[in-house]
Image 1 (cartoon, one colour):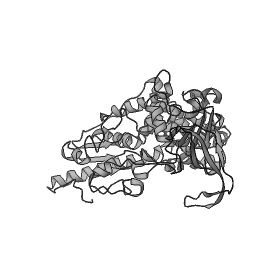
Image 2: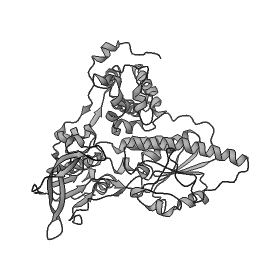
Image 3: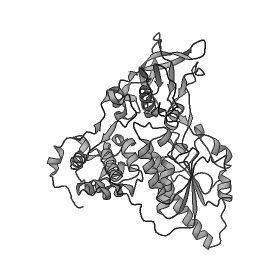
Image 4: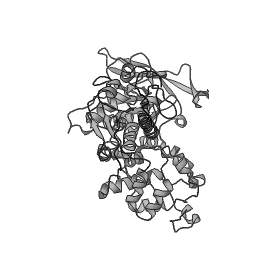
Length: 490
């Protein structure tokens, strides 16, 4: 393989990892502007020089969508930033998004050879740099699409799984139509991730990249109500359908007091802030009412997003209540670190047992119990055990539960023959194939809750399997073999 970097490996190892430029914590905790400004060109080039250009790039194998990481970094070293972002886009059509929200530290960067003895190459920050450079300099060119195929494919849901599946199929020449229940594309990228982590402006640009592939868009279209899956096949003429409707139905702890005013699911809270534009109040007259003291229950990325949002909306005290220790938190380390910098108060080894309310049914407190860690449970994390007699009350006026979500059941309940599993997820095989012929699914709808990049992986696998399925149908049609999209198991 060609070596582009003029520095010897020993010299590359001596270069310190480059840090992103960020807003000061005290200032950013009072606004919704993006926390990180990423790397400037000078820092990005220096960081790219740290890459060892491994003959066996294990970082690529650790990437769920298999980005040619060595290849795009080599193009960066040649100052060919357009070539670099296009190299990424061969495997990942949403580089500006993944460069911001993908957990690289537990995937590609975790396997980086340099990281065995030093800090790994900041692969995610380099991905973001080339994507942002393209936006800043307006150098995007839609990939060339060859022969247009006659088959039509429907994508239900415009989250990361649906968008990726749509892009991959459009690049193959299929007529692709996205159906989105809300008024704008993006799914969880738009309603679940706060502005300070993923600006809507960036999301809008990435959506335009999807449209540039010739993808048709229907918004405010709730599949299962506006039209059923069977109607999309029979009346709209689609040859295959991908379901990527996510997991937008919240779950609750089931503790007393959850019916009080001032109790939110994180899903509802973040959706109100994002889609109603509460982050722009008073410019947008759509505030979200919260108290001076807010408690968010959970330890994942959604909990971190919710508690940091509450702080920005004016909470004087924003507590993160988590029943395990910091080491067991599933949230990204970067998000935990940013929350700590911004003054979020972590109440670890603390388990809520009851929500207290006033005579007018508004939240006035959260009763909690101290915990200690016992033996590991099924997840491999040590199980929290209650400490007897350790109960206390936290004075709060708002409680936000971020303990997970499950799929909305509308499509499952209106699509005969579509097998579902625990918590309403749609069952799929390793090729994202469901129990209905011609129907594929992925992302949170089939996983029940996962990362953006894993949803994209599902969408990418499904696109290739849809392509294989349609080509197989094409061959069958030429041999006069009858096909059906009936509700019988495939």
